[in-house]
Length: 224
Image (cartoon, rainbow, N blue to C red):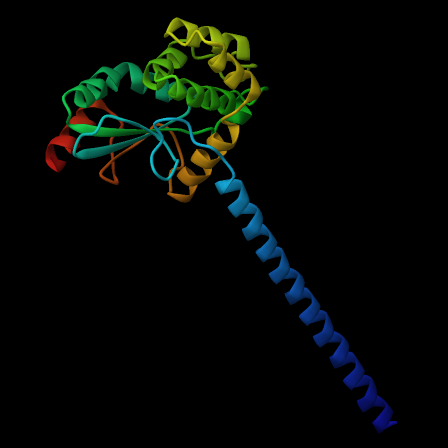
């Protein structure tokens, strides 16, 4: 009886260890698979004209101080920020004081029924190809739809482009085809990895600053 009990114990222990090893193998395989999948999601994109070297934003200006601006086109606070600080930021660019990197993230897709954040960001990439990114971004905020609805249609996004000089079929096709949706995903995922949790977020030479005209101007003056 003792031998039989010992044999049963050995079989049970082997079963337990076999189960542990199997679970560990599955976990490792899952982690490897997720890593490959996430890497593919992050890198399988084409950046529009004017994008930064890492593809995470559109560069405007070439000044010595870098200002990173993270905004979502359906974000009401971003719209308010643009109204309050947009002209000052444009002046800093025009004066050659800053290199503005504009990151059009899509954090708020859930606040529309058509993934408007993603569609608007992708359309801004199309505008960048036409050399009108900043003008188009401003126009998107001027026509910002309310949260909770469908957002602007693709035809409306195309009409906004026409209003800033993007009248060619290339822009219209780019918007309708969602050419830069993968790029938008890359921009958004990179922002999340970099610790950006809300919009608008502003960083000057990598350091967070208040999202206001005074906050940005003071930080640029201190950095320059």
